[in-house]
Amino acid sequence: MAAPLRTSLRIAETSICRRCAGQPTRRAMSSITQPRKPDIRSRSSGITSPPRHFSSTPSHPYKSVEEAKSRYKSGPFSWQAGILFLFAGVGLTAYFRYEKARMGRARIAEANKGIGRPLVGGPFVLTDHDGKEFTEKDLKGKYSLVYFGFTHCPDICPEELDKMAGMIDLVKAKHGNSLKPVFISCDPARDTPEVIRRYLAEFHPDILGMTGTWEQVKEVCKAYRVYFSTPADVKPGQDYLVDHSIYFYLMDPDGDFVEAIGRNFSVDAAAKVINDHVADWKGKIDKS
Image (cartoon, rainbow, N blue to C red; front, side):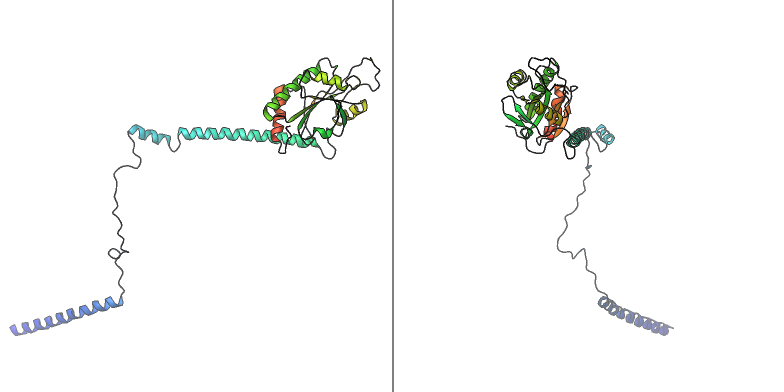
């Protein structure tokens, strides 16, 4: 019975050795047929990354619980951001109001220029209070403020000329010598150049007086749409009344009509109208 047992053991040992002998061959063949994957951990580019350190400190440290709660309640906005937003809003509001007023003045000036023949203003020939000829071309280069009146006017003309003097000073203080004030007499029979020169010296030295013949005065009043009732044939010593329109006519440096300023304007309001138009002018202004 021992002999068959030893024989079976030898057969089993032989089969086991043959099976083990074949295993290295299969492993070698599998290593040849399958490409080896690079070991990323051991064969990197040679650069070793530094070890990462983790901190236990919070990213937004707060000194107290109250401070953390206050920061949580305020959110992403702060009182500094609120003030900045307020100032930005005020600035934009002021800018849009200024642009709206400027565009309104531009529309008025453009509408008053008319198409073809000007609505107000035009050619004329007069004589200034120094005895020199003066035409519409002499108004160009500056803004001009034209007023029609007469030296024997009891109340309205003196009041308006006082207002004109204040307007001249306010415009000159802001824009220099950019305004040419002109007084045109509607009473050529009595208002000679010398009479006008003495009369205007009581109001402001910058006002330039104008007169002429009755026909010349009639033509310039017609060009500026001014009504006047001075009789044509006046005898020496004859007493009469003069009625006329009461407006200041603002003309731009090109000689075009800009705006009419009535008696309802105060000195400050009238000067502001002129200063705004002067500031809006894009061309050159003669300030000599």
